Length: 210
Ligand SMILES: C[S@@+](CC[C@H](N)C(=O)[O-])C[C@H]1O[C@@H](n2cnc3c(N)ncnc32)[C@H](O)[C@@H]1O
Image 1 (cartoon, rainbow, N blue to C red):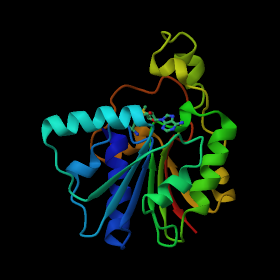
Image 2 (cartoon, protein in one colour; image 1 turned 90 degrees about the vertical axis):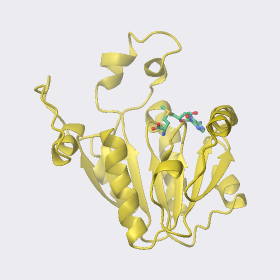
Image 3 (cartoon, rainbow, N blue to C red; image 1 turned 60 degrees about the vertical axis):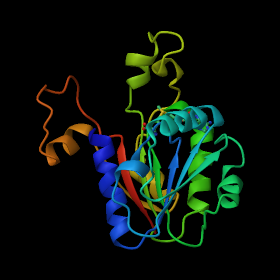
């Protein structure tokens, strides 16, 4: 999908410039470790809670999937001391990291999002990269309110700030934000349906640590 493709570029560029440490926060069923062409020496950490990581491990075993980089899973709740768990698993904050958090922040209350970003920032050497997806403004009201209990949308709690680029600048990141429509067009897969409402700066964020 477009998000994945956009952040794939975000991973390939730092790879080209020497970033060999990748962290997927709320990795879920992300399969990048198994399908991307990683440079020699890449270490990729998948952070999620134990249940999804265990399920994923069983599927990977069944499929006899082989990672194309050094893949390390870190079972920890992102509301707990995940930087400690990540460091114990071998993450080195002294060298740059490419962080990916897709489909994650929308599930965390605002104070937890702030804390997560502050922690990412302190673990990020200059030159680190970050790819985020943020819930678009109004998405919770439109989809979350009537969502079936237990569905993903029923668990959405936070949307993007009014000024995501400014918000990230305050945390020490030079960020760009894009809409899905904009990125889709840039990849030659334009969305043909007209926008149903005025489109705000988008929820696809790429950022470089200053
Ligand atoms: C919608 S999925 C997105 C998965 C993947 N990033 C993707 O884009 O396909 C959200 C993931 O975040 C994880 N997650 C949500 N809250 C978490 C928390 N507090 N600690 C660790 N993982 C969490 C969930 O277990 C789930 O795997």
